[in-house]
Amino acid sequence: MNIHEYQAKRLLGTFGAPIAEGVAVYSPEQAEEWAAKLPGPLYVVKSQIHAGGRGKGKFKELGPDAKGGVRLAKSTEEVVAFAKEMLGNTLVTKQTGPAGKVVNRLYIEDGADIERELYLSILVDRSVGRPAFVVSTEGGMDIEAVAEETPEKIVNVAIDPEQGVTDADSAKLCDALELKDEARADGMTLFPILYKAFMEKDMSLLEVNPLIVMKNGRLRVLDAKVSFDGNALFRHDDIRELRDETEEDVKEIEASKWDLAYVALDGNIGCMVNGAGLAMATMDIIKLYGKEPANFCDVGGGASKEKVAAAFKIITADPRVEGILVNIFGGIMKCDVIAEGVVAAVKEVGLKVPLVVRLEGTNVELGKKILNESGLAITAADDLDDAAKKIVAAVNG
Image (tube, rainbow, N blue to C red):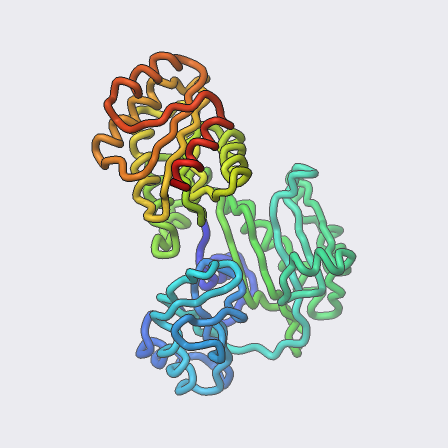
């Protein structure tokens, strides 16, 4: 689960991280009211969407010459003017895709005198099986570009979970970020704070880009991106309350209600599969034959007829779907259960696009019998290759 920047900063602030004064607003009137309460005279007006690259993004409605989704204002009047331009319009960044995201809220923050911009993140380094800091002196930039062009400027520091962040770990991070004097003292305090927040709140990613050294020599968290492990949300009621469903795909929201692993994609062939590996293989072979998958959908190993029907309905609700491929290898999941779910869903919502079903494994003959006797326009496939060829041919007409 992702949250907005302002929510991430508030959360980190409760652990003691240094953040600027700021407030989330939903209208130009609120922007004017709250900006007047900030110290000023410099204000930062930030679009709040679940995507990076906001500063370099462009608003669809404002033309290519308009300013991006993060702007500096030198007066409350300018704050209001920016709010009127940004709220309700669609911000397109590298991470949103061409469709962009509508800006429903802004974060107005007190400005900062920046001396240096640094990069810091915490994630789980699966290569060593530990949480790890990833830091760089090249803050404010695309970290992937830094990794590709100047990988020597990125330093990883793995943390022993039994000890937490030691003074030696903090010193190593300070050295990597070239922190001195007050900034180094702040770093020695800040790194254990961020690690504590990461661990206690079951985060999957904590990214501060940039972490700044101000002209007074102190550190400040200038931007923050936080993602949480969805499997651990049951023990964090306070985090679940931060969820903004307007930032999520409606199909993914519905899928989460049924505990389906569903990710919306940009293609036109809907996929329903059991098992993540088989789902990836199914998407790959669709691409091999010249089409693009419309989704990743794993119904899991123990899905019920109702869960399968729900998955099918979610797939057919996508207007981009021009054909559906069901690919099931029955182990724990039984082929007859899949067949019953598909038939029930088709009878309820109708079938307006070609449907190819490949079944193999437990109760496969019973599953095929259910499909064959359903009276529905379902095309059977012998194997995955045959299924992919048939659905692609059907979509191509």
